[in-house]
View 1 (cartoon, rainbow, N blue to C red):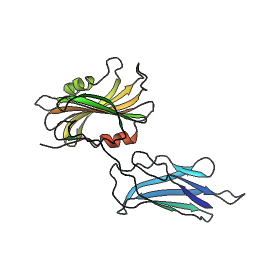
View 2: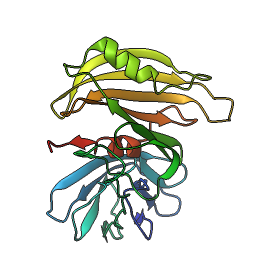
View 3: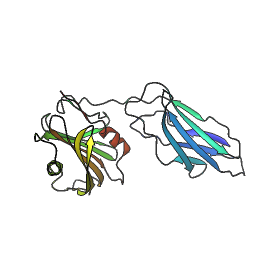
View 4: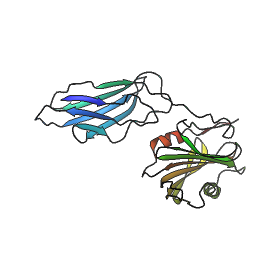
Length: 252
């Protein structure tokens, strides 16, 4: 069988890469194969492991795409494909690539002192309000929306009722979501509440979808609402989660 790895010319963390191969048997011959693939970082550590399943025609593909880190290690990354079959396999089984760097927005004069969020330049700024003391920013990218809101909070540990008030302050009065559930969590050692939301399409044509909103109390007692929201899809994009996880705090 002839093996060919289907791979784009450029790879970036902003564009999840489908893991696909083409495995063509000799004419008139059919054969089953077990196909796996691993991605190694420049230090030869396994970044991801994939099982590939038969697709249309002679293609095999993974159920999930490859999502690279926002700031990948410099150097050569590698994709290696393994095929087990009764027939012999010919063709290149490895791809060496270098991810394109991601450029980030300068948030130093936007967020409260000591707060950091790594937002790629490619994210379109949909809404900007307030100042570093109290405000909010909403960014969109493809079928997802990332929002961060902040305001001074009370000088005591975050309570559930306070989290609800902060959350509702970020809702659209003409199209508030349905809150499906909540759980108390920690965010980098800080008290937080994770709310599951379901948004409907609003009057401006913004598609609905599931969302997760985390209400966090920072070390300076500022309150934050970090929302990751799907626009017209059934799942929150993995890239949105990856960017949201960069929200961090430091004592200043």
